[in-house]
Image 1 (cartoon, rainbow, N blue to C red):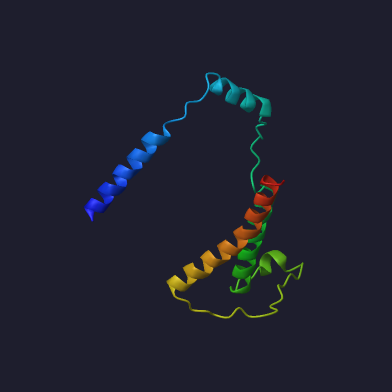
Image 2: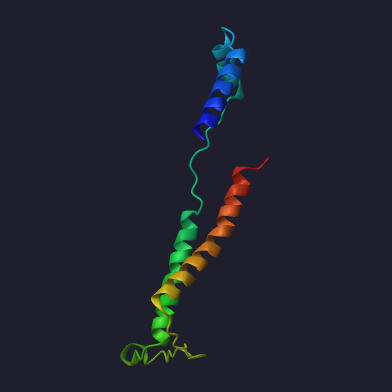
Length: 131
């Protein structure tokens, strides 16, 4: 097996010696640098993928959802504070109790995260590499 590699190695060396190496002209570097400078590359300022207002909206929706779920599943009474307002939260539906393993919870969370990221990344890539 090693004899075959030695033959191929010798063949490659002989072919490279025959072809020789090509040397660039004397002003090769300066011509390349002139072309690079001519492109006048524009540096774009940093712009986050998700703006601050969207992050605040996500945080507000998350907080309101958590408070709503907590309030629906608890027996909190604001009788002293809201007796004159008659504020009663309507229980439109009861939240079912679902028992999932920890692995299944992680799997659902990662799949949801994946499907949330895809539209954002696609829009970002379309904007970034528009022709």
